[in-house]
Image (cartoon, rainbow, N blue to C red; front, top):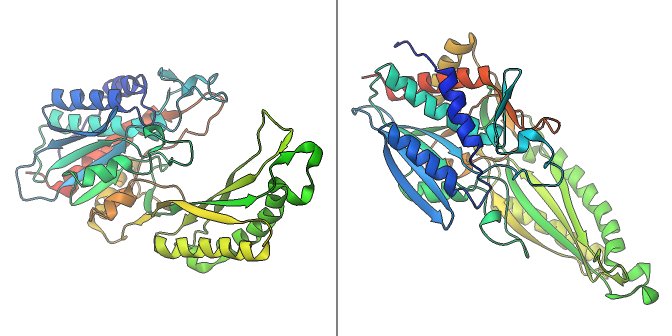
Length: 407
């Protein structure tokens, strides 16, 4: 196999440029332009996909000489946060300005998932440096709108259109391959499957009235308190049901939000209170079945509390994804990882969502595999270990050689 030499400084420099290019969900255009220019400078074929105003996908292709399978690297352009959130505005690593400290690269989006995009770019560059010609095509898809967001009520517009919005556009406009590596931060583990997500709103009704004439019995918030207790009983049953587990990993249901009343006018009792649930669904369960089960919950609540006006709606159904352990892509990743790290990678199942959901349903077997995650550091901010980026970029390059075949 050709000798591959990752250029650490080059990788960090490009990743820092990516960090410095803000790309909140709905406003990914500038980051797409950086990707397109980078790919053009590398001599790749570049396809620009305008998803909607202000946001685009970029699909680059490194053509093979023929006779080998094609491999896609897929990564989203949008970041989990904007850095302007009140609880993050003071955290340096959640700002669009890169800095290095103790061998880690900090900055908005580096973990999820501009670090992976940087690894894709460096992997292709190092193949060019080594003069490697492949039989199959290598595609790099940089896509808009993956972050787990959805429109609801007054929250409308591109800023709230996530959940594989870009990748769904990608696969209907030529962005398909024989298989795909998706570089979400997985701690260098091979993720064989991930759960999907179903979002449910449950509402209670009450009397809209001045405080002077209010009563606890007709208060929609206090009614929701009783309903929530019943919902918690249901959650325990959902999480304990073997049908909802996947590879011995239990599901989870998050009580994610509650909305009722008017902070600017607490002299009124609210007419409605909404409860929001995020129900994680295994990839082995059809979303239609999960939808039916959660709506059965809503009906049972309406029967149990007939005076409370209980109603509900499902407004997100984002299926999970899985890949067979026996798929050749897994073998290629195992070999590439072992060559770089000295041992085979561990396996994992995650409860978070990825664009593998859309890719697998379009016939593109997809595995999540990426470097370590530093997303949850709320003191210094989002970060990745630079050595991890370097090693991951080499794994990607080696995996491309094994999947596509060296000419």
